[in-house]
Length: 74
Image (tube, rainbow, N blue to C red; front, side, top):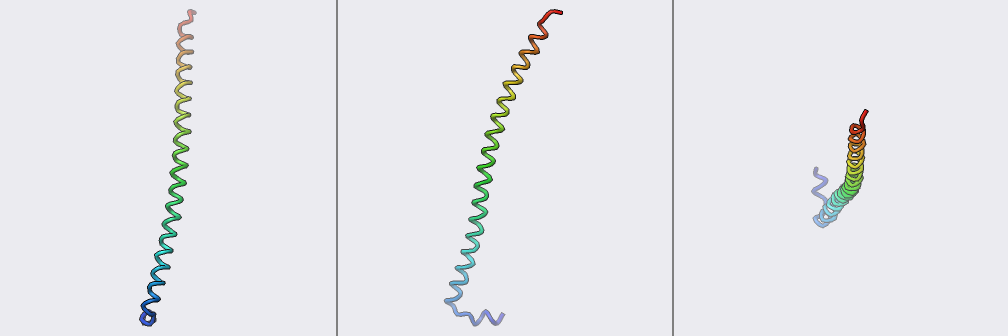
């Protein structure tokens, strides 16, 4: 630990700057990945909503066919 005492004060500015820059870059990478993940989730949600709407329409048509078949006299 005595080796750190021999580092001049102005060198500490550069060392701290490099450390802060590294932390900022890492945080930026995680933030970018979160943005991509959010975009993918929004697209997936939109697809799921369209599929659900399509299934609801198919269910409605199936209900109409079942009603018609029940109304046919034997």
